View 1 (cartoon, one colour):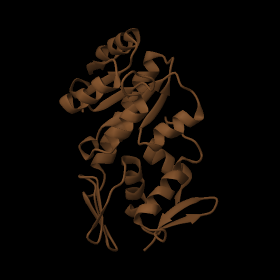
View 2 (view 1 turned 45 degrees about the vertical axis):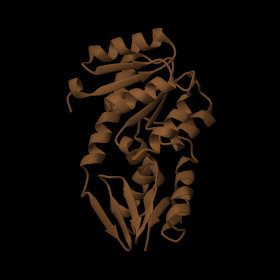
View 3 (view 1 turned 90 degrees about the horizontal axis):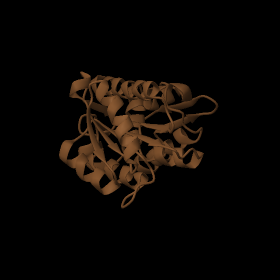
View 4 (view 1 turned 135 degrees about the vertical axis):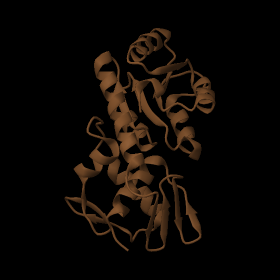
Length: 228
């Protein structure tokens, strides 16, 4: 996808930050849209359907964490990339954001050149994931529709947030294969995103709660595999 086709929404309550980031994104040819609070950003996501949302945490009306939660529960936003851009550096803020389905967590201040690089890496990874393999995966009594982000076990539909869905798709893509933790991190979160050691474990636990305990096996000291 050409930069000129990419719509980026910046949501931040500091006008100077929005203008500075927006200026640099426009120089790269991206389409830039702006919101100064969470509610305005939520409305704009529905209106313009951006490819990427750059999201601050502390905003009036609706904070970034709650906005991310809302967006990730709506199937229409399945392809929306969400990157937090925030001054909050605490581990728990980063873990919470990534567990809610954020694709990246970037701390301020950041040099424009590095921010642009992170954005381009996100867009490349998103295009690669969308293009990989077939749309439907059928394993045992599971049917996974990668295009519609739907999981069925028999007649039951199972709701999974974006990162849980992508993680399940990865494991199911090669039943019996042991996926090392580093490989999972790189394929689901990318090499540019730093996530806590518990992030994968939390996602696996949540997937097991929804599909059943017996399908995803823990290989101690290595990673995980899908068996049926």
